Length: 131
Image (cartoon, rainbow, N blue to C red):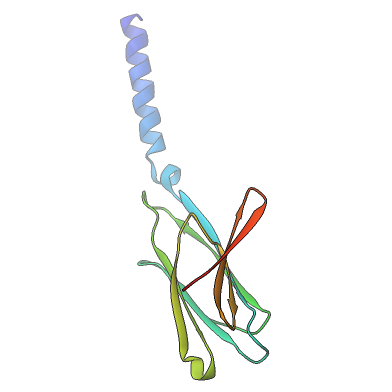
């Protein structure tokens, strides 16, 4: 490769690398949608509070058969840890906390006997109960 072409290629590669490392190119590398459904008995509201170290989604009261959902976008090089608190029962004394990962359940259902996470993989629905 002649010297001029090599130099042009190196400059192009350098400029391309800078472009790819710019904030817009790195923004929102990790995107996840989270849904939490209240399948508790009639009259049993669910309180949901999800957050990361930097972002608080706030407290949300979900009535029976209702749901709460949000989309979280992380612009860091490593995915942020996101966790959710759920409260239910008389005076909301029953409490459960769980982490939301980029791989794994994105939909949860609160039932009388526990919280269930759902994963859809290759047209198969997998359900697991949180302990």
